[in-house]
Image 1 (cartoon, rainbow, N blue to C red):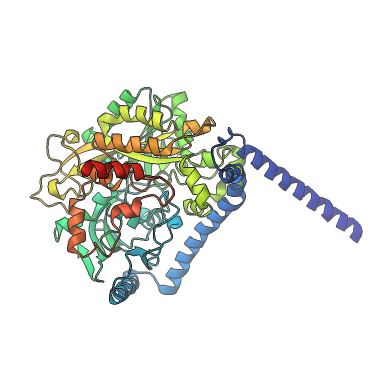
Image 2: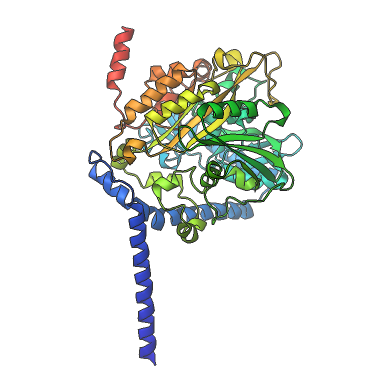
Length: 585
């Protein structure tokens, strides 16, 4: 009896092992179904590409699931242990700020030996860079700054620490019928990165960049002084800080504008067949006055064919309800694509699902990493675990993989005047040739000398002043605005898919040059191959330069270029720098 039971267990174990072996073999086969990489790539990178899918499926995806649960459980335990409520969070915040002030004053007492940076490792940041250029800097610990400090339901504002994430704010705000004025779609993105870096969403055609929702900024400067600034108290400093990438001080708290929201979004999907039609319809929808959609974006599936997505708040579903973020559902971008086949349609989505519709698929990058991720088998076995964490994807890279991946993978965004979109689409097709492409219309505000880093050209502006939603506007400054559009490419370039080499430097620099020419801006979390002078031709540094000099930041913090440039070994700009020096002599 015991021997037969033992044989039964052995057979069962053999069956399980055989099934697991078959599963691993199938995953390896599914991941290697694409065309092989060109022999010009290092062998380490080609080997990593072959093993990428099983590593992601069996290691990174489960670890990402555990990381998300760990963060959630940690937040709940912290609340239970340290308490919730405004008084307790305010006390914790004061302690956090005191710790940062203490570190900076110690650095000053030591004679300011090195430039200041946060101690956050670069693999944990939302950028393409693996190296952080921090090895020669004094590192200040700020990771504990992640509380939601206060939600004012009457004033419609939220005061938060910079480490608070979009997912965390969704949990806090949506049950109250509130959301951020500009609520970014990726749950792991932090408030600090959106304020001091870049943030855009599908209601940006109404509200502009994330920075337009900022009402007050609290930061610690190079002397260890805690400062609080609004548009009224110090307009030059207030408008200098967005896009400054922490080159003036360490952000400690932000007060953000909220808006009231409804629990559902009625989505209308409209296919277009030319870039010109897409551009015309985006302008018509964005400028349709009170009837303009609350949310507006498009996804390009080829140089000609796109699907516009227009969303409208609603209290109850007016069409078939589609909880699009359930683990067993197709990825949102694949669902949207069906409009190219079946024509225009509409449906209702839960707001929480809509706001984070790209989290499961990392926009559409997951299909490049796990080619069978859209298959029902993957959704059943791994879909409930969620997407790989971007931070873990970077952590699993080494320097060789990172250098090679720049030549095999593109993450670029160009913000151009809306009228330039057809030309931009054609250019992107030549430079990158990868689809889908992201299309987010965005309203850019011109405040004259207070415009800050993003100073729009006259040609893109509407003729009459614009009344913005900002409660912090200065009444004596006439504000004009115009529609630009963020065109984003994420994925494997066409040449690489065809087994060829792709010249990242030549193509990205061509994109940068064209973007400057048309009065646009490159998004700086991507790989920036511009020289310092070229970056200053694209962005308006005047307010930021004055703020850095005034607050003693020049010898305390790296400038923006030092923070956003690629790490050593990624791109060689010696020829371009030499040509600039020769031209300036």
